[in-house]
Length: 572
View 1 (tube, one colour):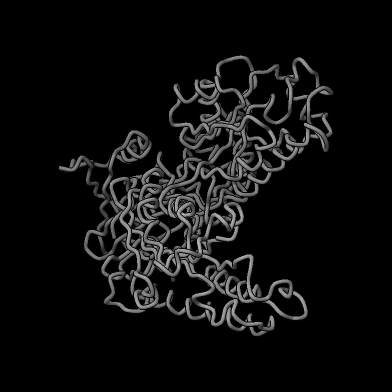
View 2 (cartoon, one colour; view 1 turned 90 degrees about the vertical axis):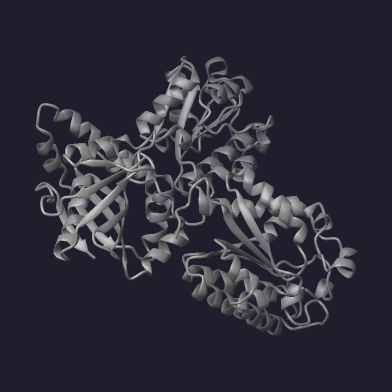
């Protein structure tokens, strides 16, 4: 299976119960704009189910990476909006429709394992046969929609590559009158108004993008006129706008929105031109502050230019500039950062603070389809890393080995499973510094490797006396030939500098040695993965150039051993 990279065109199939062919070009354009060049396949009217269930159909010849299933309740629930059903009867029909779709998805995944499938939830028109009876006296059509959606959400919870898409939220934002045009159904079996196609395309492209690109890791915020109204250096702590009423309410709601990102695994930082004492006093004493200083992983408060401050923030957190989103109310500061640091995403912040929260929630930069344990603990893990640095500095006169022993590092290696899969997919998309080949595999592709009897996929979890770093390493080993091929070998940057990479490679070498096999790797140098080259140089390995610009490396399986200061637990 090919790696995901910038040159690969993502094959996206859209199976719909009505004619949506007019969304084809807007969808391809929206994907291109998001860095996902694509090819698309659309089922013909009335053909979505036969496409799904016929292994000789055009769908299977197309071999999509992503399939979108968009069904209309009037097409899949018998009698929808034509009768007066009880809620129980409507629920039964909705459940049956969902089970039929579930069966089709199972058929697809058996024949195209690893395909990512997006199932859109059902939506219902605002005017239908029940009128005010909807939800009253035991009658309901909405019960069918809810039953269908519950069943599909349960399906998504059982399959790592199946996801639920809530179209109702999109239609609510758009407005039904501009979403659907009933005049088009008799003439072309189309339901959507022309104004709906760009919105639907953007919505679907946003979902597909998450399967191809890693999200940004850190939101960097200005302070004055961003987290509060006014300038604290001029207005004082009591004079800024921040509270539960009046103009300050917009800033309080924005802080709540920002706080919610922490629970989605997003790091927060501050980059502000301000007197540090004045700014920090707001965090300490203002009763309206939802965000606390402890919520921020890094703070740069001073009078230097912001591009330089953003570079320091990236170094402190040890992430790339392309992981930062910079939020500042000043158009001048935004323009300067865009010019000096094009890798940083700088959104065009709304002029009115009342729009801040909704605009933040609409940013695609932080989109994710799954939350891993590492996401939920990210802020805590960075604080633990700060403690490690403090101990390292206090032991500056001691040998590195003494520091490693003091950390009491424990490595746990497991075969990849449903629990670790989302985190592994996340790492392979975003790890740059210690990534031997920088191959990019989607979650679906990694799951396909896991099902291959000739491929081993390993996860590496690390903990020490300061805390649990979570899953920080991944390896994919192809055992179909001798020598075995180390296809992927990567480590999160937060685990570097503690010889963990030595222990991980020694484990892989040991597996090959036990089987009487050799082990070979392909190193592909990039502008970002110099730490891998240094690692191989430390081991004294010979790099043999390839015609494609990479290097073949023979791993000496007889010579590598796990450093004595590392405790290795193998559950694979």
